[in-house]
Length: 191
Image (cartoon, rainbow, N blue to C red; front, side, top):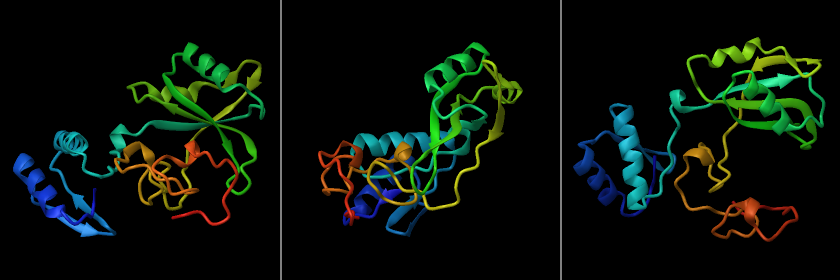
């Protein structure tokens, strides 16, 4: 999805000349481009990035990580130790994060595990012990709310697929909010 900018026609013409696509729609401040297949999707994504066009992509389901939640471990369980144990059991782990309560950010005894999608990724559900503790592994169910990007702070996409310039909510600078020199919370963020 391309950011709607004054010279959008030039950008769409360049995409049309390169890929032969003329199936675009304007909506919600972005121009939606509909590629014909996965290969074209990836080629358009690379083209926009090399040309410096501000855009974001919706990650296709087949490229999203396989995510599960591990329950039954303590609040202070080391995520690196958990990763090593799972890897030793033949599970290809890409990332582990301790989950927190939505309202007050207090840590929960649940761990979000992102796995590399392989043919045997479902074997994670066979793991029922970590060390001396019996655990449960459940499918991750995402919250049903609007996604906000941690890169540009726009809505409807995530930082993983964001090609827009970073923007800070605290000072409106050209950097991510977590890289801001202002460390205290801001009462009225700049959006």
